Image (cartoon, rainbow, N blue to C red; front, side, top):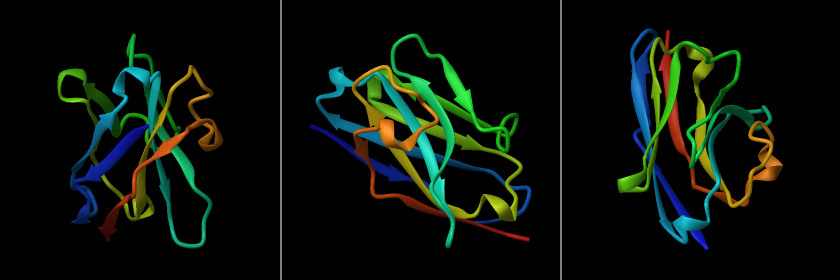
Length: 124
């Protein structure tokens, strides 16, 4: 089993930055890909970014490319999402997810493990 715990959410103004963290525990050797997803009220969960745990290939949604950066600190078993130039449309609950296999990183249904989510609210 793998456990994921997110932190770092909060309330910020448009244009500001936040960094989300996701600490991974358990069978961490069993992870191939980690991702960030978000879900706004009344909307479906959507892909934000993903990173292969080994090799480091990264993937981004078009709406965040150039503003958000996904990274890992493998020594700390931590996944990060640096979010710059935040906008009100980025308001959502952000979830980290992990897959034990080389999955299709943009698809939520290819991840086996999920965190509880952290709220990000961007005011205009």
